[in-house]
Image 1 (tube, rainbow, N blue to C red):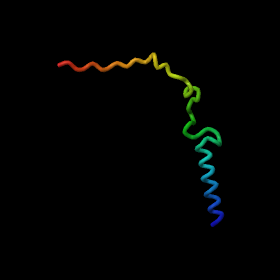
Image 2: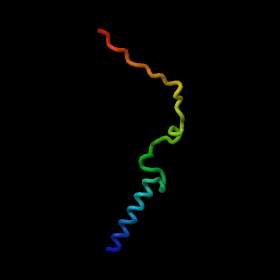
Image 3: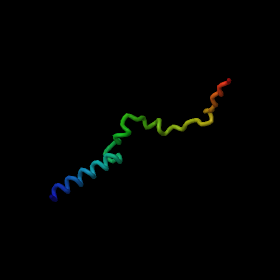
Image 4: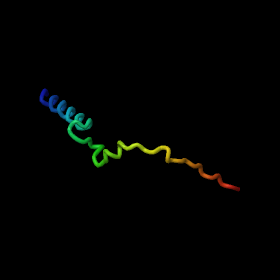
Length: 56
C-alpha cells in the first residue's frame, strides 16, 4: 500500500511539473510562436465602424 501511495505521489508531481513547464515546453504551448505573443498591437491604427442601419 505504501508503494502504491508513493507511485501515485510521483505521478502527480510529474504531471504538475509537466503542466507548469518545468520539464520543457508546456503541452498547451507546443506549436505556438513565442515571439508573436510578445508583440504589441498598434491600437491606434484600428478603427471601429458601426454597421449602417437598414432603411425602410
